[in-house]
Length: 273
Image (cartoon, rainbow, N blue to C red; front, side, top):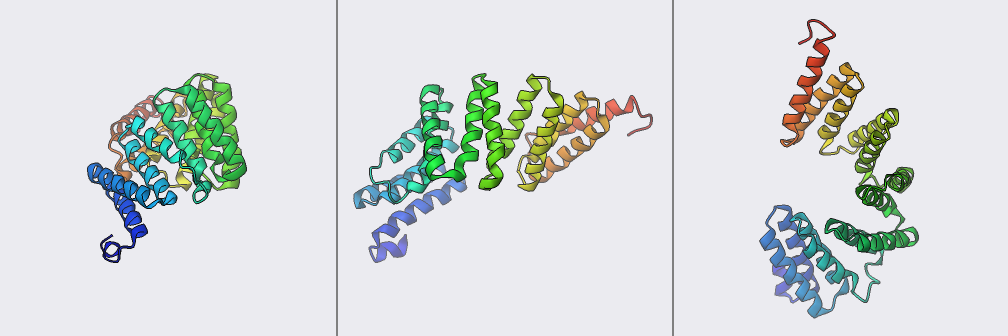
């Protein structure tokens, strides 16, 4: 920013301000991040640089999402969607429409959420197919939240079918975990177990930060199936992983799960510690 201002390289002043705002957000400095991004947006408007306006608005939406201020996030996402000259960022419009759909879901406007999910899906089928696994997963979650489990399952299965071909595993953990939850409601425990194992496999492959939580849930499930030795194995994995990843929120439950598995095993295997 300093050298760009020295030579009055206006486009890089805007870009530098945006990037600094995003950098500040990574360090949880919301007030300064917001200030820098608003400055960048104002400059991009003055200089009429649609691409930088778009990128800055998306960044603003992102910092408000991190603050769980979904109304403000929607405000800036919708302004970005209204930019008339979309030629310089058309290949990322699907991600923006998806963000808007999720935003409407968060504030409880299901009608507009459905409208933008459909828009995202139509756009991505023709212009941004790599996004399809994420859209299918979010559509599944949308329908599951309102109790339409059969429709939700169909979208999760579509997510499962395309994530490898599109090399997009962003929502794989969520999709598999939610499928396991639905199959529990249907009392299809073997199918639930299969999706739990898929969830674990993809989490291990992708080094998912909250892998300990998945191990924990699987351990709890195995205890219900009376597979106590395996439950203890996954409870120990849960404990080890939560400590390693600093997941302090899950740690007490992981400790409790290990104790539960040990207590249950002790009733059937004398002398276990």
